[in-house]
Image 1 (cartoon, rainbow, N blue to C red):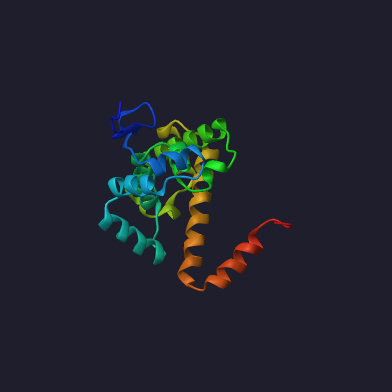
Image 2: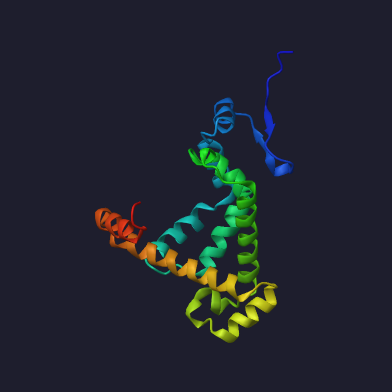
Length: 185
C-alpha cells in the first residue's frame, strides 16, 4: 500500500511500542543488537544529573545499596532484562535460555523486595547489617537468607571492582582481572 511504518511493537505492553528504525529492527532480528534504541531507553529512564552523581559516588568509593537500588529501578524502567540483552550488540548471539533469563529476572525482583525491606541506614551503610537484621529483612521481603547473603556478596564484589577502577591504571586492572579468572581462560 505504500504506507510508511512509524512504530513497531516489540512486546505486549504499551512501553514496548517503539519508533520504527529499519537498521535497528534488522539488527535485532539478526542478533546484532540496537544501540540506538538502548540509548533512547536509557535517556528516558535515567536522569542525567542523577547519573553524574552516581558516577562520582562510584568512582569515589562511596557506592552503597541505595545507589544499587536506583540503578535497578532505572533498568526496570528500560524494560525486561531479555529485551535489554537483545539491544546490546553480540548479546543476542549468546545462547542464554529463556529459563535462565527468567531466573535472573526473578532474582532481581527478590533483590528489589529485599532492598525495599531495608532501613535507610542499612541502604546507606551495608556494614550495619547483622544476623538479626538479615532475619528481619528476609521476613519483611518474603525471601530467604541465602538470597540476601548473595545480594550482599554481589554488592561487595561490585564495590571492590569499583575501587580497582578508582586506581586508574588499566593494565594493572587487567592483570588483576586475569588472575581472578579460573585457570585456562
